[in-house]
Length: 300
Image (cartoon, rainbow, N blue to C red; front, side):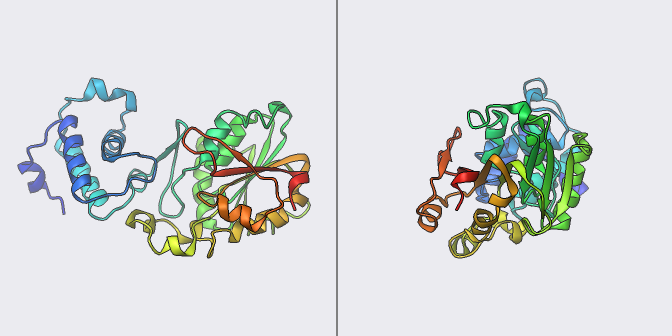
């Protein structure tokens, strides 16, 4: 526990001092970096700057700025919770970043992260050739609403339905939709996949569903145990939700509609489960087999 006496005796004074201290604590306690930061330095940098409400480009100007006792106490508390309790930094900050977009998040929802975000940044080129012609998008398993919001930005004429089975997740998504001023273009719908979408069809369906296998769920790093398990686990081969998507999506796609789904390291399982389906695997900067694309006429 961090007390006022701890802060008074602490020799840390500047942002430089605290980032260095955080890195040491993170390495000593063997944190796992899997929620947007690549290594302990990036994690320390993110936690310290955003706790202080500084922008990332501000570090050079404020590297040697002295911290107040109140700032130092808050930072030490968060560093301890990250290092010892293994609470992911986005939950401590109530903030996660995706393609330079900040999103509110807390323990009610999985921390925003998806390779689909990178694809939306490029407006799904070359697969979508008429950006302004996309009029309807469905974001299934929306969580915090991050992909639905990015899709609304990418396709300015589209109405977006963001769907999740969890009311808690939709409450978080509502915060983000309102922050981005998109309440008139994005509808939040509580539904078990397509169950509440009878009669609706879309030009584009995107989904980052649960895809962690049962075996992998048993060996997740401690950080992931703070996330809702319903947003992670998907059965023995990780395809429980994907199978439903594959069987139900076709009737909810317009002619020439596209289905884009993230499956993590489930490519081999997908191709084994659907050997006759001509998956197109989309390349991103870091991976080339995490996200598949199917046209309506390619679905089984």
